[in-house]
Image (tube, rainbow, N blue to C red; front, side, top):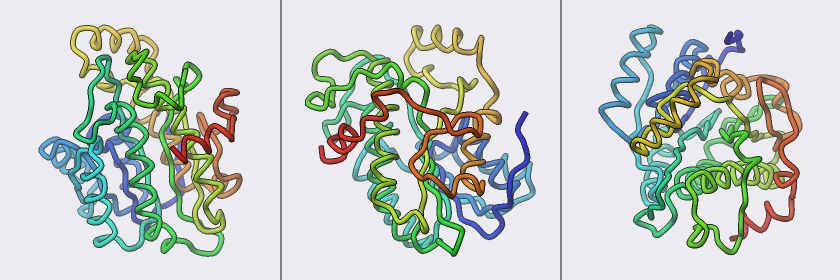
Length: 282
């Protein structure tokens, strides 16, 4: 069951991957809490339809759509510029967009697609929006950066000299690595932020009943069917994400990893701070 949460009245929330699944469910919860929500999606028709449905459901009229292919660095930078111009104050950035690709594909920038979308987009968008996030800080009320990771990080087998998996590619390996990178990014970012003004956390949302993996043809649909046997609802998957965006408990110990509203310990590899720093440098 999704539990009540604090009010977001007067706050601006930016969430990526907002047109479906966890993201769409989170938008609804933010809107019910009174936030002005900026929904970032790749497909314009789908994102606007989701926004219309949520506004109809909640009675809100201030949900905004931004369209961007976050696997492209130029698109991420253009999005950040638009967001800074339109929203000089951002209270919450929820990095949620992500996918798994069973076949190795390269983006227009020459990056392996999972790495580009699931990790590099978090990194670039977050750093470019820091001025708006710092502008939102108030005494005792820091802005929030919330990064959706996954328990899949426990299966990661990263090679920092082979980030694009030009050798040894596997779709699940690339996905697990990217979720590890989300945690490493969170801890490295926390060390660089003034935690009295901006805090950051990562989370595992659970195995959620969404369209995740269905972009991979028959094999993806088979995987989705297996996952659905143990899946929770998108609203339940969004719960910890939205809770971290406003809970007083999340104003302390920046850089942590959470599941079901509880701080948990990630894998031993995820706790290797020296490797997290090496990834940041790369």
